[in-house]
Every structure is written in structure tokens, then in C-alpha cells.
Length: 385
Ligand code: NZQ
Ligand code: ZN
Image 1 (cartoon, rainbow, N blue to C red):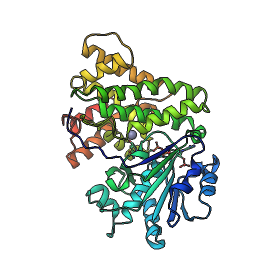
Image 2: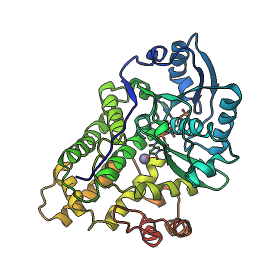
Image 3: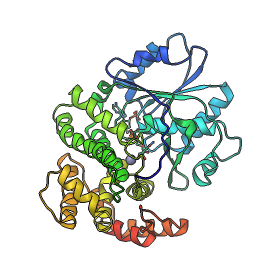
Image 4: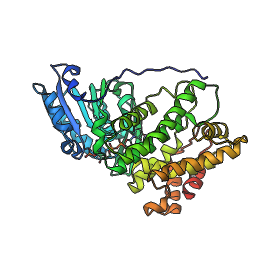
């Protein structure tokens, strides 16, 4: 196992009827900015539950944070935080609202003109952030228990990630029953996102980490067993709860302790979203099978383990088992209704491959646990999508 340092300061409050705990968890003297998205929380009763729990608190609101949150929108919230002296941010929504709020928290401590350029492009992060917490409503990103965020900029068609120890949520309220209202597409996106997070952390090369491997395989197996249940019955609380906990544990860094990682499916997927606007989960389902195929030899040991321990494949030759694992993963995505080809989304693979090669060349991007995915390899992967 490799050396590691783990830090996870977020309090998780999980279960039915937990939104009311807000009044206990937020100090009474805080000036709160409640952030949310396009209105789902007003339709499914979450907004009312939050407002009720915050009766007597000093609360401002900022709605309209879009999926793949945009800097152009978030900059307006930063102005409010600075002008009104907000000292607590409460994100109520999916990963996009939470990521956007993490950015607002950091950018509010930045004094220059262009916080996107500083934080996302140049990586010059402020040494503090406004305190933040969340009521997370979509199981996917794990943002509720991690220190990352992904922000898009309309003007430049960019989508970039940042990490800061100051944006771990102070607490996250996870009530799985708020996910009954998710559109099927978002449920599926979340399942695929969680599956891919787990693989990005685990599917590299072996460093003798059986506990982390078993945790990761446990997440993959749980996703496979619970996905059909929520699709058949969207109000199945037990299955919704299991999916949410998988999503949280898929990206709260437990499974990444002491193991090499590979975030190349995400990095290529972010470009597809930036150029073509497809959902994050969709972008991953398209890229991952082709990327795994391209990197099969380097990843054969872990892929074979996934074939045998997740998909119960009886094949003793690693390379053959690896091939089967990749097929099974794509079959699983298709079985839950996720399309896995660029053409399914009306995107020309050659054009996409060329755009991504040009961008990666310009940035000198090199990806993969062994640093083998450069602009030309990314081109081959996307062309095959
Ligand atoms: O905007 P509203 O009206 O709230 O509707 C949202 C949105 O349209 C809706 N929704 C959310 N919860 C709902 C609901 N609808 C009904 N009932 C509910 N309970 O779902 C739509 C999608 O929401 P969004 O927040 O965009 O989805 P998700 O949570 O998948 O977040 C995606 C974003 O997170 C980033 C992605 O790149 C993307 O920008 N990621 C963040 C990560 C992190 N912070 O660690 C890691 C991930 O790999 C990912 O990159
Ligand atoms: Zn993701």
C-alpha cells in the first residue's frame, strides 16, 4: 500500500426526516445564503422543509444555479455574499448546486477580478472560505463529503475542477426520500457517476490493498443490485438509501487511501460536456468503456478482479477476463437505460476527438495512473466512442 493522509471533517446526518436538524446544526448567529438550482426543491417539498427548519434564522436566497454550474451565474452570488456580509452558505440541491456553492465560498475570499481564472485555471486558491453545508438531493458526485468542485465557464467553453481543504461541507444532510422525485435520467446519471468514481479510484494497478479493493467492489456490487430496484420502484426507500450511501462513499476518499488513481475518464468526459453540453454521467458512460479497452493491458489485473468478484465471471486468464469486465460494464449501463455511444447523442466522434486532442495539446495534458494518456491517445479513445 502507498503512503496516505486522510482528512474528512464533514458531519453526515443521514436518513428520513433529517432536514429539520438544520436548526440544531447551524449556529443561530450566522447570516445564511441558501443556494439552490432551477426549482426542483420547490416542487418536491425540500424548499418548504428547509425554510421551516430555518425559521428565526437570518436567511437570504440565491436560486438558479444550473447543472454544470456556470461561473457567470456564481459570480452574482459572490457579490451578494460580499455586499451582505453572509457568513454561512447552505447549498440545497444536487452536486451542481453544492459545487457552485463551494466555489462561491472560496471566491468570496478572493479580491481580484477574475476568480475563475485564479481558482480554476491558475490554481491560486484563497487560504480560507465562507463556512458551508448542504442538504444534498442527488446521489452522484460525493460532493457532500469531499473537498472538490467542478465549474464551467460559458464564455470559453471550459469545465475545470478545483480542490481545497476549506470547502469540505461542515455538515451534509442526506435524506434519501428526497430522491423519489428524481427524473429517471438523473437517477441513471448518478448510478453511472458513482460506478465510474469507484473505478477511477480502484481500476489502476495492484499495490496490495485488499481492504480498499473489497470496499470498492462492494460499492460496484451494491450499485448493480440496487439500480434495478429504484428503476422499478422510484419510491423504494431502502434501495434509494443504499444508492445514496454508495454515491457518498464512492467519492469521500475512503476507497482511495493508499492506492493509485486514474481520473482520465472524467477529464475526457468534462471536455465532452464543455463542448457539447451532455450530462456528466452520460459523458462518463461514453468514454469509460473505450478508455478501459485502450488501457486494458496496464489495468488487466484490476479489471480481471472486477470481472471475477463483481460480475462472477469464471475466466482464469487476466486479459480475457478484463475484456469480459469491460463488456459487462457497458452492458450494465445499457441495461439501466444509459446510452454509451457519441452517435446516440448526435455527436460526431471524429470531430469530438479532434477538438479534445487540440485542447489537450494546448494544455500539455497527460493523464492516467502511468501518465500514458496524452493528447494523441485521448484522440484515439474519443474517436472510438
Ligand atoms: O436544478 P434543479 O431544479 O434543482 O434540478 C436538478 C438538475 O436539473 C435535478 N435534481 C437534483 N435533485 C433533484 C432533482 N430533481 C428532482 N428531485 C431531486 N431530488 O437534477 C438535475 C441535475 O442536477 P446536478 O446537480 O447537475 O447533478 P449532479 O449531482 O449529478 O451534479 C453534476 C455536477 O457535479 C460535477 C459534474 O461535473 C457536474 O458539474 N461533479 C462533481 C464532483 C465533486 N464535487 O466531487 C465529482 C463528479 O465527478 C462530478 O464531476
Ligand atoms: Zn463524476
